[in-house]
Structures are given as C-alpha cells and as structure tokens.
Length: 48
Image 1 (cartoon, rainbow, N blue to C red):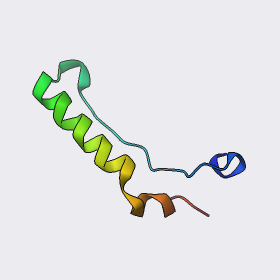
Image 2: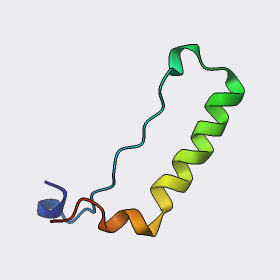
Image 3: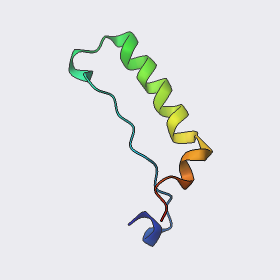
C-alpha cells in the first residue's frame, strides 16, 4: 500500500510491555524509535 501512495514501507517498531514500563524505559524506547525511523537501511526492507 505504501508504494501506491509514494511512501516507503518501514519494518514495524516493537516495544513490548509498555504498560508496565518505567519512564526511563519509555524514554529509551523513544530514542530507539527515532533511530529506527531514520535508519536508511530500513527503506529497502519489505520491498518486493
């Protein structure tokens, strides 16, 4: 679907156990999410 709208598909980002996560764990996950979203290598994953 992303290719039909001119977007690039990114592999999903997973953060398990967020309901029990501490503020520090959430902050760390947010930093990891930014790295994940900006990783240029992910732009080609899932492309068929």
